[in-house]
Image 1 (cartoon, rainbow, N blue to C red):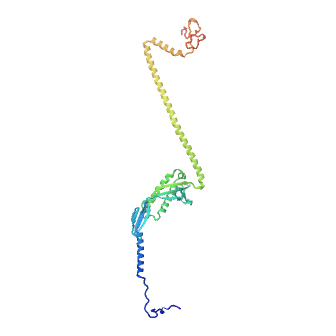
Image 2 (image 1 turned 90 degrees about the horizontal axis):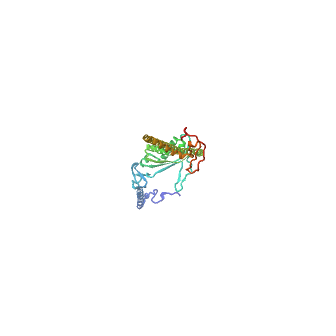
Image 3 (image 1 turned 60 degrees about the vertical axis):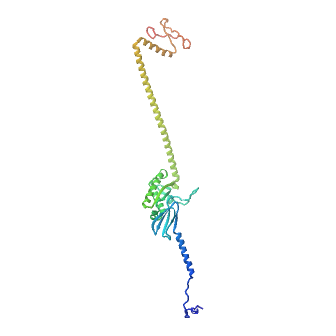
Length: 352
């Protein structure tokens, strides 16, 4: 049977009094109030302080507006989200990798095996393709500007870095990218990235741009290796030729200078000898004028003294013995001279 409220004593159907209202006990209301107050106090306590790490800086917004920045340490703030705090690593150098990813940097570094050709393959100025891997190191200088200027700081840095690097690589030949132009590429990319982020007023400083592995694409890598070997052989031959040139030219200059010095010495010796002969002749002439006969005889005897020791045989011819030669006593110890054939007198009178 359906329930009939009139059957209840005091119900509406029976014309009795109204049913009593449901009321919570007073002690239960107090408990609920205490619980609510406790939870609120805990939330207020939990949201009324924050800590900043030793290499970080915090930016505090109060009611959505910039309030101040907080240095490393323990700080208080308005609870219940009235103060919004965001922490940035300002003293640590951050890094972004392009063309590769480091999975674990430990004693033995591990890299991701994923394909990052969309980042690394670039077109050079001579319409060749180079596979360029590089990293960008940057530091947050002004965290407040970073928070207000950039919604996605990390992605912005990556986009700017990739755009700038493609422009720098596109202005150079593939040979410069693979060999000699690495340092110039790094410096130009760092400077250009700094200018772009400076125009954004992002509060980010580019510390360094470093090229890691720059290679030709894998399908053409053997041909590039052959070209590189040929270039190295050419440079080796050029260096050898230059070394030989640097060795031979100084030797030739030294030999030429030695001959010049020897010629100058011979010249000076001949000049000095001639001057000595002139001085001796003048002195001899002076003595000759004082006593001509004595000087003439002395000259004759001195001349014979120099000439006769050089002769092997000496023949004396005398008029009294006719035209036969007289043997001369061998004073040099070579034995007596054999009779020689008759010799004619040097003068018409037969005198020596």
